[in-house]
Image 1 (cartoon, rainbow, N blue to C red):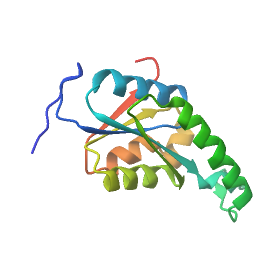
Image 2 (spheres, one colour):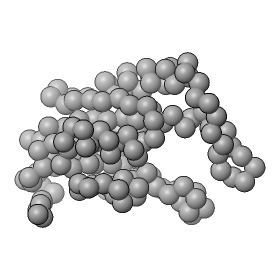
Image 3 (cartoon, rainbow, N blue to C red):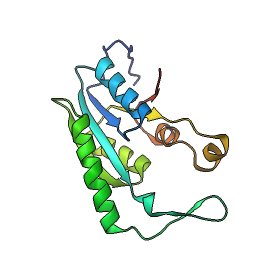
Image 4 (cartoon, rainbow, N blue to C red):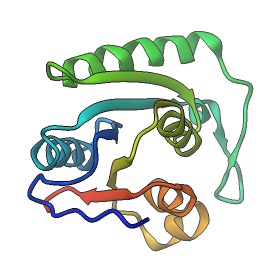
Amino acid sequence: MTQSTDLHGTSGFQRVLVGVDFSASSAAALALARARFPGATRRLVHVTDARVTAAPDLMGGVTPALPDPTLLHTLESADGQRLTREMQPGEEQELMVGDPVTGLLDAARAWGADLIVVGTHAQGALEHFFVGSTAEKIVARSPIPVLTVRAGQ
């Protein structure tokens, strides 16, 4: 089944999940979701990245460290306050801790989203080669449509 949409607000999308990471591209994605899908129910989802406790290694990657529960709780609390400030009346929110890709996909599936909207970030070629893009991974793994938005579009 193919779902058609024009980007002027008339679509079959009723449940739009917007990934929020507080970046400029995330703000652009949220603004676009609000403008293009005004009649849809929107859920703003932020995933506090549990990998913040990883340490750089000598090969240019990261070595996982045991998550510091106090640090994660502090980050989650601060992120929750920021997410609440981003919301508009009628919007829902969900705050998670973990891997952003898995978290957003799990949230979309559990909520029954029919569209995911996420911002994209510019990366250097080396960083892109080794870690890839969160948005690309979501697009590759999502069973539902994903709209990616770059700041400035």
